[in-house]
Length: 186
Image (cartoon, rainbow, N blue to C red; front, top):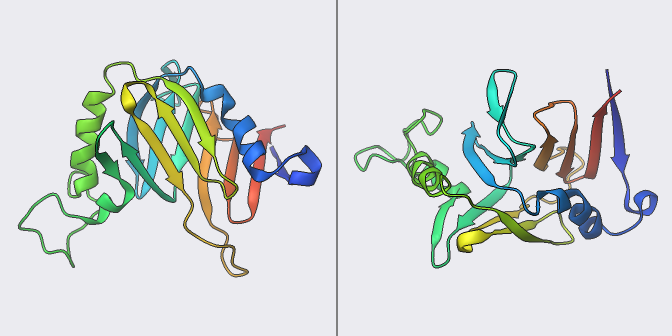
């Protein structure tokens, strides 16, 4: 059983930006590693590596479902839009299957970035905006920027990103078009 709490700015105190800053504060000083994807969702691990449910996880797992980019000191390294670019120059843009591992430019670039992250890359600071956007700044001039790109709709609720604590799929904070939601085990 889990408990769902919708966090509203007037209840917790502060703007969405201030609440997101409090949520992300524990990432400062943690190593960033384990970049991957599930379908079109970026997965990033932070902190000490350990096993949970047979997979390596960090103290925190960030799951990004909106637009994002990972940059180095002088160039973009990989970005969400790379998913829909084929890795094979002979592939047909209209028919290639981006969900097949290795078929997209995202997969190629993520492999390169993964090698870069074999050296310790640590979160040094972060910036949040008033809309759930975030910039995580790390050593080596690495920055992960998350920028929500959907407005609230009465028809569809969109999740921008989710921060999961310690590999526990029942203990997380979600930021989306409806604000922030905290889910914890009971």
